Image 1 (tube, rainbow, N blue to C red):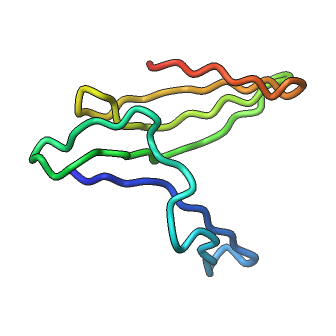
Image 2 (cartoon, rainbow, N blue to C red):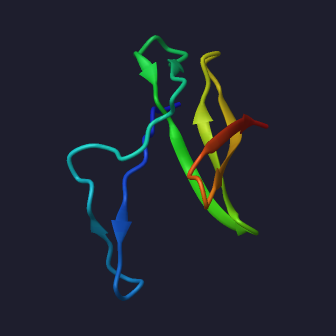
Image 3 (tube, rainbow, N blue to C red):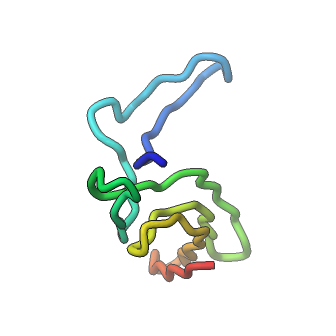
Length: 89
């Protein structure tokens, strides 16, 4: 198991990626747990996707939990207010 934080890349041709966060990840789990082998905190946040639904965006992703495992989560962001509500699933 690895601690995998999320960076950001862009592409203009769908073949070549440009890493725009080369020095540090842009997103990490807000609830890091310990790696099972005692290697330090697990900040994994990966496999993110966004769905536009009515007047909100639902972000689905896998994130590290405080229990030392990964879980699927969804965060809902209201477009008019920018308020976010996170839920573990």
